[in-house]
Image 1 (cartoon, rainbow, N blue to C red):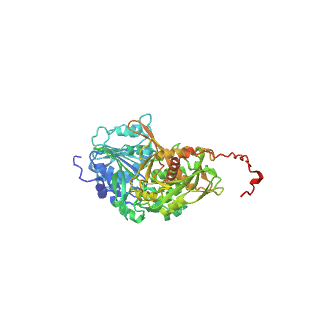
Image 2: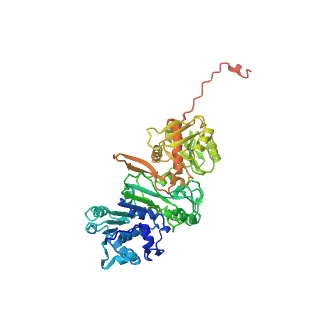
Image 3: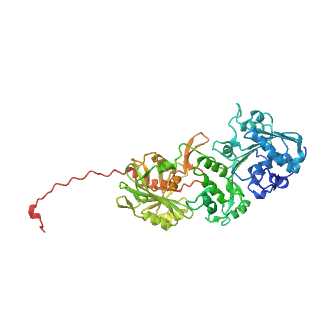
Length: 580
């Protein structure tokens, strides 16, 4: 009991002593941290002095439970102290004790030597110098009955909000650690909602970490996200499993599944916030993209299998992307966009259209665009949209002839091109097409007006103007117009052959509420999750900006009253005929 702990980390202890049970792992045998290198920093945070709270927000197939058990094993062997392990229910606590904790103890020599089987019970395990109590979050007496140095929470987003008539299970369990200066509280779970326990732990941590891995082609470090996973348009789940490709966010090259393991070994955790000088709580976020046992095709298959059913999509976002599910009332639904279809074809527009605008979103190696016609009362009609590959294609889009349903040819009056990416190329293109194209940039903070104008250096396009605009205001405008009935004055309409993916991208964001330290509430539009593509929504905000710049609010109804014929003034009479 008085022997000081060996100078080793949790990951070193696990590599030396941990044996995985066949009951607990698909690959039983000796533990190797090198197979899941992203777990090393998380486990080793347990032995860092000053760190009292560890939160791990994780997807499926990542080894999060095994990492938690390694911390438990280290504590039993090297730094014994009373321990509490909290599961969602008593039944789950009993099952885990019998099928996970006891097999781990039996297979590890130093743990087996310290285990007192004779005096142990199902939910209370005795060791030399310590004990482990396993309880369910639904049992207030088990949570509040004993002081402990270590508390482990497993799948805390499945905990009940209240334990009987007392406080929440997290609060009750954490109260038990007050008397220990060297306490350790570990929380592990997939998230459910933003208001869930694990996501609150993530947001409240002093230091928050994401795992960055290097591209095998260009070496650029990046977080693996759903946005960079591509598959042929129109593929079903089975086809996408074989055809899915992951593209580097920096160089655009394809990253193969066979290269992922080497990327994981060279990966590193980076803070995404500015931590205080003294860090007492740390949080780690990891999606299933990093799992050595899942391929990029598996991720595509799972998403496409789930995307049309809200319950299954929620499970994908929670358990695979490790992101909270948000289902807000003010989220725009794609069906609302499809309800705005009118009886005209893509590429044409109603005769009452008076102006044409275009919005262009610039990506690494391609572009998204949308063309919209405008009439009186801010009524608008979708004319065209899509993806193009080169600046030459963009030039074709903005110079193309469009016709109304009567055959009258119209041209784009103004095109707004997002300059947040490939900025120099955007400036150069706009300088060459100053008659129709202008560069834009979304403001990082709210603006009082809808946009402001900055004159760029004269060396760039002879005084080219950059339009900074409030993207939240423009998205509010689009959301508001979608509440107007199709075809009515002020409506935001689409063509009858519009494709579902257009509607999905328009509805890829929702308003999220933020509260600052002073209690002031702000609302911002954000993607519903990392997998949601919002390129066409970005093009439509730029198109709306172009309409605003052109003064679309002041368009008037055409005068339909027929002009009366002027009274004839035949002052020459018959003499005037053929008088030349």
